[in-house]
Length: 633
Image (cartoon, rainbow, N blue to C red):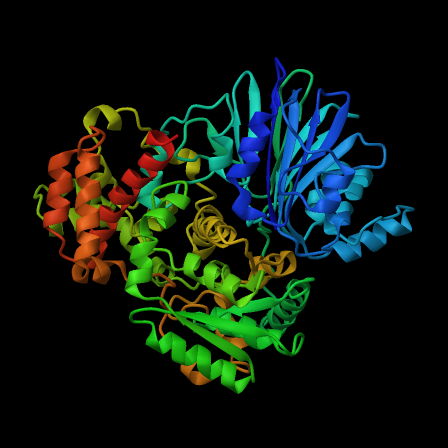
């Protein structure tokens, strides 16, 4: 787990000050080592940096000011092969192929054996070297072989190519900027913004989808011309003509196996999840499990015990989370697991509020507890944390999925919206409900961000006229059943939202989150199950609950679904410091001319329920985002 960055300047050589500044911007991602590689497209040289280990500094000179067309930067968080042999950028034996890689390939030992049988020899025990030799053998076909999470940048001087790639689910982020002169990429946008070619500009289309969906829908970001490389894809750039092409190497299996019985499915999911847990427990550093107290994370923790008898677990406690903490403690006691509980006080949230919000690279509709979780894991001495993230998307865990059948029936009456002429709150709600024409609309409604009419009212007219409000290009297959919703949950709720937040939260403290629910085999298997086994419209996660019965106590199985996030509405009502913080930032925002000040005042003065505060918070976090990335750039 690390941070990567780089650029290719097509028309002229540029100073290595660029790669030094870019790499420094993501120092938090890899405090253990750093490295650089620069080239004119023909000849190349490797360098160490100020934060490199002493041994690496003895091997490579420290990079000062040099000019080059291509530069790769790397920050290392040592998880596997802690020796200098795992150092990056890593070069092929002939020096013509160079790789930087962020993530973990869980099946790398199996692939290594296959490569050894083909005659390849290895100098290290790292998964990075396995990727490098996989490329030499299979080229870009290697990506579909990897089970894990990865963002890869690879320079192939033999074929005059640059390749950027991302794992199936987009668990590791990779952003890029391209114009006629340069391609720039990095694990975080804040690194890209350090390149001399880039002046940050707002992408209002990205802001619009962010307000509607709680996250900007990939491949767009809130920055003009900066894109998120899509999950399960790779981008190839020809160094000679500067042309790019993007290819997808995997998609969800769409053919269902209707003959699988419930008993078979329960046994197979149980087996595949155990295999995934076992694989993801492998590390050369201590591993812990993050338990929220719900089914997903407690099941992962229970399944870890047979493979790692000294497995630790921890739980973050905050207001209204008492039941979750009790359940997590109950599971830990039942399985004789060393369990740590960290109580996060309101003051701790307040003290880090602005800094934590601005670490995210777009507006956000909540208060993120995951940063506190990552910080606590680091305090306890853990670099690797198992997470239950992904189970809700994979097994129909969200409450909105239970409303699907009702919506599929009610959408037949959507014509009534044309006969609602009143403008009170209830009429607006009814009109909004009957404006959900397709599955993307239904999914959007469930994300508790702004409604389209609310977004339209809050943007200043001159800004709103710049926005492309037609989201047809964001639609997926739109099948009128649970599978259609599953696609949106996986692509936009998981890939664009949850794991993106996870990565930024964890890597702020140099910690790696891993996701046993998101192994290749488990996703492939669950995707082909008949709908009746995965989704019944009555109870969330019916299949996973069956798997959990032999591992978890009834108290956990019967607990209602709750999100792992701080109670924002309560915080705003009870904390005068938070209200002052909001008023200060809203006043600053109103002076910018981006938004309708009357609507902002109306929203602030008329908060009737917990969802009303979400809209306010989205505006506050927009202001903080703007301050950080535009005013202070």
